[in-house]
Image 1 (cartoon, rainbow, N blue to C red):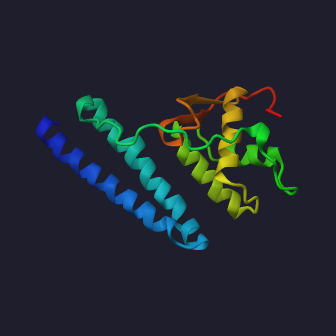
Image 2: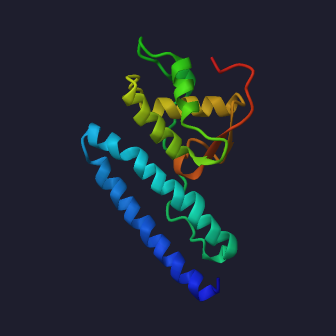
Length: 170
């Protein structure tokens, strides 16, 4: 592909990304049942765009990658040792929930937190995104999962599954 065509396609892909972000905001304003109905499908669109299409473009033309518009910032400071779980929720259940939302390839921490939060509501755990993020941080520190970047900065870090850990954090 020549550079002129690459620039044209890149602009169209970025237009799709902006439309997707507007759709995310609109879906976020829906009631819980409607929001859940859209969550997985929106995640699939984002995954295809950001993990498959745009990386191909940036591999061919690295200079087309735009600088981040959002400065990295910490979204959650809750530490796992400071979490108080509801009586009907166990740490093992949240572990399983988080791990079920992860893949062996890199994913944004924000995507894993968001997917785990939606799934927690679906299965009746109903724990906050900050609790899920606190356990993700503990799992990283314990070596259960791998990370790139500070996982407290959900949109500017990534996590993935790794080999079987010996024991989970307390």
